[in-house]
Length: 132
Image 1 (tube, rainbow, N blue to C red):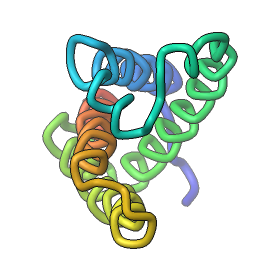
Image 2: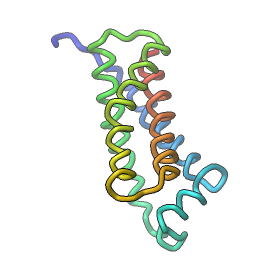
Image 3: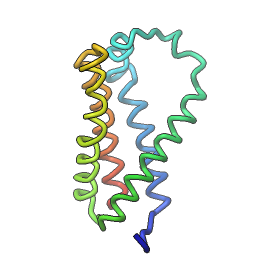
Image 4: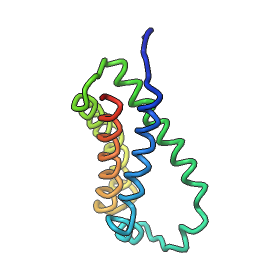
């Protein structure tokens, strides 16, 4: 494990891209209205939650760090290989974890598709940027 180099610039770019993807994904232009309905939220429920963006960015940094770590350990040097790693991590950990809400908490499959779809796109983009 010696000699693993993590590019901090690509890590920060990936984390910022994760935030941007989430912003648009859950906006009124894409899936925001449907997501709010499925989560039983109103716009007033979301008011004053600006501090959550800070925590979401920290989470984005953690995700980007571990994507960087795995890609560096695997010697990934191309966008497509990075995206493949991102897909595998999404499929192996994110999708399988999030499906529990459908199986055990009676969440709708549509909500799973919205939430998991956002993570899939984010992981593909983040891992591709890091792999480049």
